[in-house]
Image (tube, rainbow, N blue to C red; front, side, top):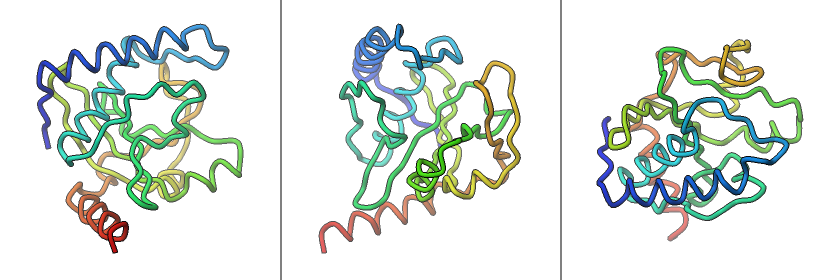
Length: 172
């Protein structure tokens, strides 16, 4: 499903993304994988938020967001944005077993960055399921990633139903 980002949100994204980038660009663990990654990633998160009526997280997170862009009750969602979906969904290999256990129930959503005003939300997979796919080095995309083929992503309407259940569990 394609989401169009209104101009006022594009301005908000540009300001927050640039601020975040400037605060972290000299950090030791700062990796630039693609040009404008900070803007593209936040654009994917905002598109997801706008489509599903959620509030995007625009806070500065000096230590990162822990791989969680949205928290709905016990449901954690991490939006992965790319301008090249032909590769599939890339999920970085985690060498820390405690971190892998912590992330296993996180829902990973693939967002395709088409332009500053157009994002396509492609599909989703649970983190633990994504880690069952082969891992390899994809040139220009960081060290080692699990590669999830697009055909193995679940439809977004199923994720939306789970999100609705998670919202109801908060109220009840």
